[in-house]
Length: 215
Image (cartoon, rainbow, N blue to C red):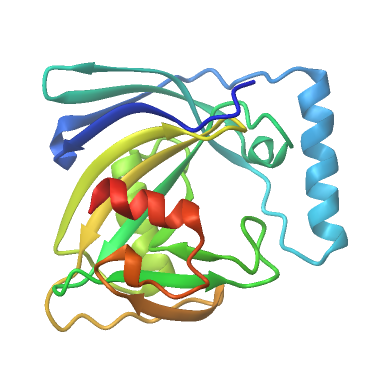
């Protein structure tokens, strides 16, 4: 298992340059990881967090052809992303969000949520729904978490984290005058300055690294 974050593919790409091809066959993680996923869901219930286990997406393969990003995706159990040390290439989308001044939308995730509780995150993010394009996930999560529509979206990178969770990273720009309204998954939010070096102390280094890569 790698201990490093790996950039699998680097854009940018326009949304119409990204193709996701879904398999009908669901991923079989084997008995050991299935049991680990069961334990992870039980641990969420024990701490009072909603445990919406179900079907999500797994990256089965990808390639870059010319100016296009092609991804092979298969259905997988959502809870596999919770397995410590190996998320089985489960996919999540991250929609980094900026205003017309270049500022970054940041929110602190509520203590009850399943992923990154009580931590600050950039923009919106979440699991790729069954047979959904990850590009659609970016804008859907932005609507669901912040009740706002993007003026422009760009796909930036495909990244694998050390525990084998694959992040589909995009960047969205909001129209002038857009007003964001956070959902109940956030208990605090802010606009952080355009320059990550000016961010507040709660902005941890991994967030700054992402912003520097894209800024």
